[in-house]
Image (cartoon, rainbow, N blue to C red; front, side):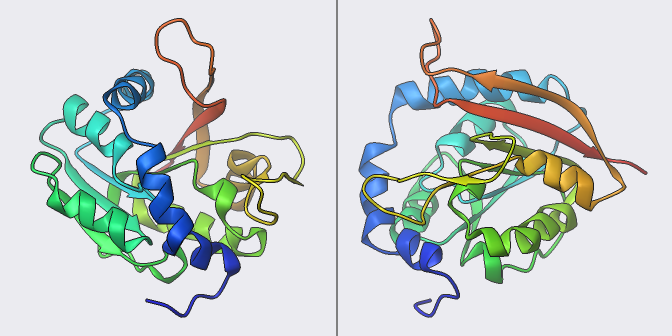
Length: 209
């Protein structure tokens, strides 16, 4: 897929997204993610299917495979090199949809639909579409783990403008859907004594009824 609606999609599908692969995979990162997801999953029940939007090469999916080994895992990844690496993994066993989030049509509902460090890179004009996709894809839980800011702000990203945006993503989802409630939230810190992480705030939401 080469014709994208936004500059941000082309950015991540191209060379920058491929270069990101080598910077963001390690055994330590999987350990850090496992600690975070163990905390999140402790607040859920019976999660047997998960879809991640924007996994890159699957550092979060490795953590989830360890924590819920029998779960049905799926992913939507725009970068072909990253998608191929997930497919070729001998341990992940993930259904990979190689496409833009903005073009994806979910084939089913999943117990947990989530993003982690992805909404911050979506063109702000397209966020309502992505919120709808998260809501549509989830049968119960929605997780957003992103850079939080109480009001929308753009910040430079590795020398690029228009590629990283902070805001209250979870609050906007709560305002958009009257059948979604907040379960819990936590901040994870880059100077954690044991499991260093990017400075991300995760919000676990649940669909009612």
